[in-house]
Length: 639
Image 1 (cartoon, one colour):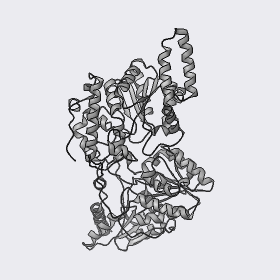
Image 2 (cartoon, helix red, strand yellow):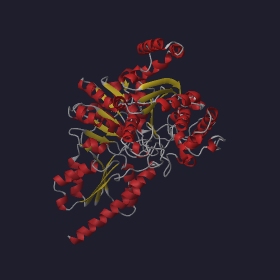
Image 3 (cartoon, rainbow, N blue to C red):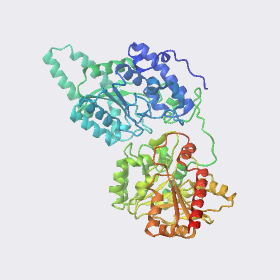
Image 4 (cartoon, rainbow, N blue to C red):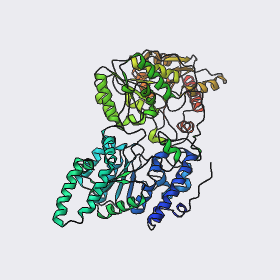
């Protein structure tokens, strides 16, 4: 259903300033319209719906009470920022969300003055907010109050606690709103989630505390002080916000995050009376107000385009399995043969396919929450104890645990296996989620085995290879989305470490591919064949250790060599160039080119268009071959 909903109250809101003269009932009406508009927009674009619906009232209340954009509103992760974008002058473009040339799916500094800090990874908002607060107090112009909104799932990351500890110590005026929906991407895990749950599962105590708080006001002043001390003692023994208060925050809550009266009242009081850091604990419901989202297991965290009436998502059918599912099924088969195999993810069980592994091996599956650093070292500890851990983390999220990869895994040469999903360009989520750098930051580490699957069958073999490799760390990368649709092996066979393969025998120019650009290489070769040109094509399989014999053979038997990879400069091509330079191959006149992602962040679009921007599709590869042949001919004439 493409008809837009009727939104008479929202239609009168052109900027947050228009909210500030409204009554609470009028704000409620705006929130209702805002929820309907958000559902309608995301049904057209796809995106992160559940978390956005959970903060509709909170978004309206914050903008109504605080003087944005002078007061800085910082959204953690940014999944929930769609209602914020609608209220801050971007409503007319909201149906371009996550599309090429359209609005980002996250907050973005160069998109609006109402986005003071860009975010697409979690747990950064309190740190950034404290930075704004300190800058304000040091005289930075144009900075008023600072409000950081962070989800309960994001609170499991150590960075959030580091920031709170520092903020509490500095005693800066800072407002942190804990948006507690008891659910990040997956149901939150760990002690923090249980602690937050205890804050409001004991509702009789909450009622008693509220009643006692009111009763204390009727006592004479000396008795009020004694009662207040007793109440704080009871609160510390029972459930209240003691942890946050010990970190130096004044704790307010829990409050109903969908009750506009409570939200506006609490925010106004906090703004009027707050002096140091204040944490406001708001309970919200992910997917609130849209029945299909509320009924869904993931609350429509991330959805494709969908029908508003039924909630049915419009996903294009495919005959090929996704790489993620191939990885999960392959790992299950390996684990059936080896009880030492365990799997670890950081709050992404479905995204990494480990939900399937967990169904088969619940006791051998570990979701550590949004805590990539911990995930890596946790795996290192299990590896040191003789287990075979597979650490399944998206390329972009593994960046958050890089020190641990180096210090706790690589230096100790522990056989942790990194399954790196979302390698390369990922489409609508844009540059914040692109897997651009893992080849470069892993292949530079001594003894690290770095593989990339050219297709889904190769991925099956690489899972088996990692399972069999027990004397050093390893990593294998694969992209988001469906495979190429080739025949699948019955079971994976461990590959010879550091050995590539020739795919097409040719002459003149050789193309050495690392990863799934191989399909585009073969398209280019087919087109070149019609012109009478027959390049050799090889699949490197390994960026480290390199197949020295294969690389040197290609260099020896061809006038030109082209490498191609779905990664940044400094990765596979750089490894090949280093080998060729050390072996003196360039001294003998080899023409060499390396096709990598450009030295820029490519904005969101379809993956096909993003790779066109990167110059890495079949037509680009063909042009690269033809250009290199022209160079080789000129060189031959000069010689």
